[in-house]
Image 1 (spheres, rainbow, N blue to C red):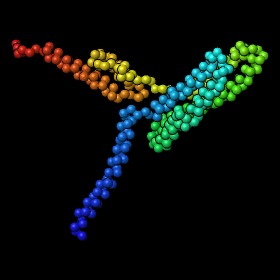
Image 2: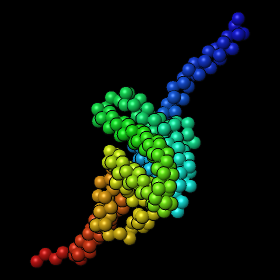
Image 3: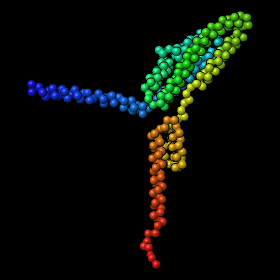
Image 4: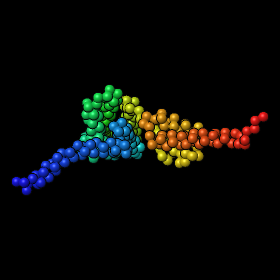
Length: 279
């Protein structure tokens, strides 16, 4: 029995070691997430702004589809194409499984924010998360509005086609086409107004900070007043670039230290160096 004791002790130690490793692994996962966020992972607000820009693109594509129809010399021949393209755009904003996943991404972000808000204990963060969740909800409503607008124009275009056929028989081809284009123009104008109304409900984007390309490459060439102005500007940003701000602060510190050293050197040079003669 004694011969097996080292074996059992070794297994026991390995088991205890395995238990001890559970906590560091979990801690490592948390650290990795923190590092990813610090390394440039998008925050919920940044993802919201990105989705708002993608929503703008869908609005623009619907407008472009209508303008292409209106600019055609034979709009009656473009009605089928108009309906097909609008149907595709409607799918983008209403179906989570569409090739363009904007609807899925917006719904996913809203769910993530709601889940996060439920676990927040800080009142200020919970309030901000709630406001952001509401804004994402408005973005969901905006996508719904685009889908409804597409569906409405598709249904209207069927009526346009019937009116065109009647008009061409009574008033002639030229007038019938003009009336068809006018109907398309009215739909485009109505869509533009709806787009502007929804944009007013969005969360305003944060002020843009200076990119690396716009920043001075050599801080040593700048006067102290301009360095201070750059520090003030960065401090005023919604999200401060700590690395950039630290570079500015360090350069200001060096300047001040050099200034103090220069003063001390000048003072020492002005003081008498010879022996003092007392009379």
